[in-house]
Length: 364
Image 1 (cartoon, one colour):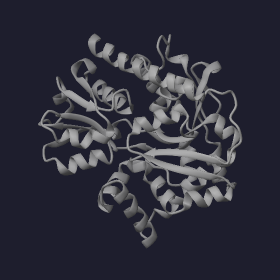
Image 2 (image 1 turned 90 degrees about the vertical axis):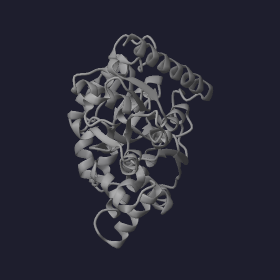
Image 3 (image 1 turned 180 degrees about the horizontal axis):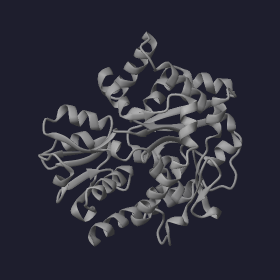
């Protein structure tokens, strides 16, 4: 156990050092952001984020940007963690990420970050898959390939704990999400923790793949969101309004059985590397908040604080909140009702439901 923890903490230390150097060089810690007209947004392949591909390619992002007289460039990144690293380094004004990764990367390195759109939570879109095994008990003693120190690592830790084990019972092997499928197809890899669409591809294409734990067993804990730099939103509220408006317009048109809705989902499926049936199966495992009302209800719920309390405890245990952090309280988190978890003088992660509330009230 000690060797595993030391290895994980050393990895976190290297990541922290690299990011801090980048942040300092690019000067993203300036006290105040300026008003501007052009913005950059990053996202990576995940079933719940495919609407960003459609909204970008079909002109919905441009439509909403034009409404507020701004420009928004949306960039698809092939590597999920790299997209967050670049957001942290100042290359992007907003980025699609999970709640845990928002805490442990930008927020932990002093980049004040706001969860602008809490679009969904994983309700089966994350899974642990084994070769030659049919239960979590069979994972004991194995190497587990996953994106180390990401939300998949948290997911593995929760699964082990719920099944009477801990990380000392396995060995984590860091593997990029871009390499998840190809690595599983090798003989050496016998256990993975992965998300869709990679999860679905593995289960569909590998005869010896058995899913032994899913995020349905920890509902609400893995939150997928579009996060933005707080100072950018404060100086440029039109940016937040445009993203929220484009998001909910896209979700509205992709629902149902109309030709337009089917065409939209088919397009998203193709961009995700699957077919319509495969993508719809992934959507069934995503608690996607299709309406502003549903998204606002979740974003303003009391449950999010309890979810984030578990996430920060895990993150602190792994040394992900900064070298020498004295406690999980080191990074403050503010929630929609104004309550704070952690250091009130160092709030670096915020769950802001106000822009979604504008969509609810028809104010966009």
